[in-house]
Length: 456
Image (cartoon, rainbow, N blue to C red; front, side, top):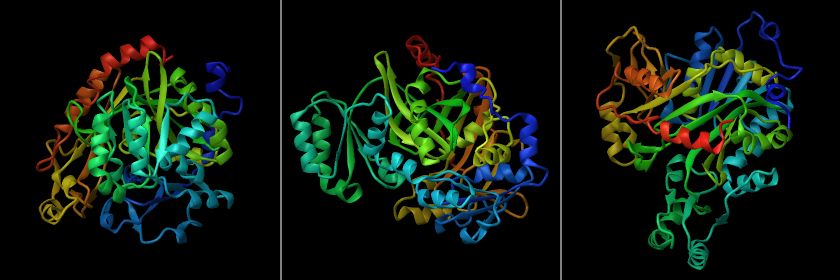
């Protein structure tokens, strides 16, 4: 196995002088293409660095999101020739991204292969196994009767996961069995199969394993991983103490590190497949780890949200620079801070507006101002579904109620938490809410991970 030094410092790694030459003096032109308004914060970073940025968003419900921050365009394909770099920010642009790369365009995000890794859980598991990654036993179904018969024959704890190209709200239908005889899952499926059939025909049953949930990710430049890697710990439940429904994510603790055992046994082994696919972008694998081993669960083959916002707190390079280098296939070291980053998602009640009640919520919260105890202090604030008016006032936009990501960095997790939550206290939004416990489990989790040897 190659040494850490060889992994980090390849002979063709671009130098600081080489980076300056590649970037040149002219501001770059970035075209961000989005299904929903997701990656405006990264685009806004490029704007503030002096680059020219245009953003397309397909979802009409997000038509006002990022107004005042970024130039929005009504269609994206006419701007392809204009752009130096095209950034796809979701997992369903693979065919377009592959086609543009074949035409010689510099593209970040998306490929047919990596889209399928994320959307088709069974395929993702099969590919991991193919490349020597240890996986949990899992079974794909599109018939609830067959699944129930299978569970009754092989009673143990399972996790039920919707599979295929489904919306984030459908992904929230994950069910984690609590009983070793699977009686709770059997009852859940028997009483809900007609309802579930309309929401997710295809699904995965995965053997349950107990341990620490951790994700390991890295950027890939089409040929190799860009180091350091990112290790992160998501908090997906709505309420503190991991209570309530699953959300996209309520906050994350993370740090940047050299390649470690967790990476080498999972994501690192996927490098040949990603190279074959020509993938350029961020990718991670979420895992359960314990004293017996590492058990990868699923891929995220795109920017994560709020992952990318929190990663920005720890990246010292300008966003436009690393995006351009990545898209051009350059081999470089991502300049990152040492220590930890904590990110907290701030929501308002509009987040719950998925019924007729949403019309009333929209009337209540749409366009409300986001104000600050100290208006001059905007450190660690990252854009969600907001806009800026002509007077520079930030206001609630879109329909999601997913408004801001507030971040903090520190040499210890406690310091990063203190900074992040101090910044949260600076934000004033009517009835805003957030989790107060992001990162509190680190002392116990880190002891386990260090003892098991996964962070070396």
